[in-house]
Structures are given as C-alpha cells and as structure tokens.
Length: 196
Image (cartoon, rainbow, N blue to C red; front, side, top):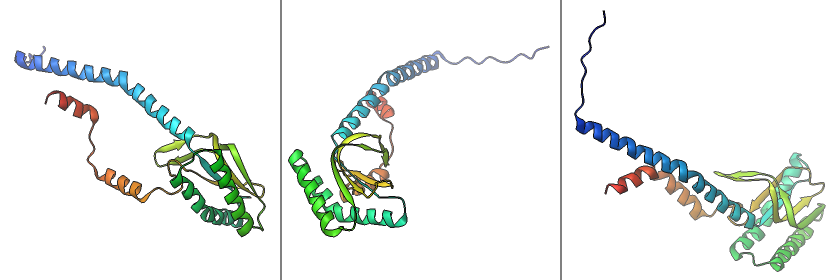
C-alpha cells in the first residue's frame, strides 16, 4: 500500500514571481547567446588590426649554444635604445625605417665587427608569441630582422606598438591596481541597473 503524502500548495503570488524570474533569466540567456559572439568577434578584429599595424624587431642567434645565445642577448641590450627611440617618436614611413636600419648597421659594425650580421627590412615571418593574455600569431609582419651568422638559433623579438620590448612602468602599476579591483559580472550589473 502506498503512503499518502501531503501536498503543499504554494500561494499564487510565489508562482507568478517564479514565472517572472524564469522569463527574466530566459531573456538574459538569449541576449548572451546572441550578443557575446559578436562582441568577441569585434574584440578579435580590433586586436588583429592593432597587430597588423605593429612594427616589429627580431634578433636571431647563430645557434642555440650558450655562447651564441649570450651574444644575442648582449646585442639586444645594446640595440634597445634604438628600439625605444622608435617607440617614443612613432613611425611615419619608410625613411625612418631605413634610418633605423642604418643606425643598427653602424652600431653592429662599430661594436660587433667579429660577428657576421645581416639586417633585413621588409615583410618577414615571425613565430607565435604569448605576452600576458595576448597571443601574437605566426604571420608575416613589417619589421627589421637582425640575423647573426647562420640565424639557426632561438630568436628574440618585440613589437614596438604596443611596447612588448619593455612595458611602461605606468602600465605595470595599472595592472597591479586592476588586480586589486573587485570582480563584478556585467550581466548582473546590467540587471541591477534595470531595477534602479
């Protein structure tokens, strides 16, 4: 024999409130499904546009031996003032690129006559790189490439705009301040804003 269970009926007021919540949640989910992909697409397009306009500099070591990698790191340190000069002045055109190439070649011939180096300007292939949360895909970019010897070793590269070579101290401070901010969900804030 089955036990009889007492049926508890909720007041009608709670049923309407529950139905209103269900409808509101359905609307919010529908909006998320419709608009989030387009927002992600817009963000990707804007980051792609920025990456395509970047001017890049790459230094490739002769090989992966410790000596060759040390030479590459020293060369990068000596060339960084030229890179930073470019990032502060901005790039107007090919004349500045050729001027930068000549300055780099003069620095190499003066301070590194023992190294067999080659400076190439134009569209060059760059390997992928992750900087923080941003992934820079492998692609052909306008750049200056400094090749040391056979150029078969690990490389160092940076993008002048935005400054991947050395982030500004202000940017580092902003990142630390952003980490301390309270995390909020924009959908929840939007819903709260509707009822205010």
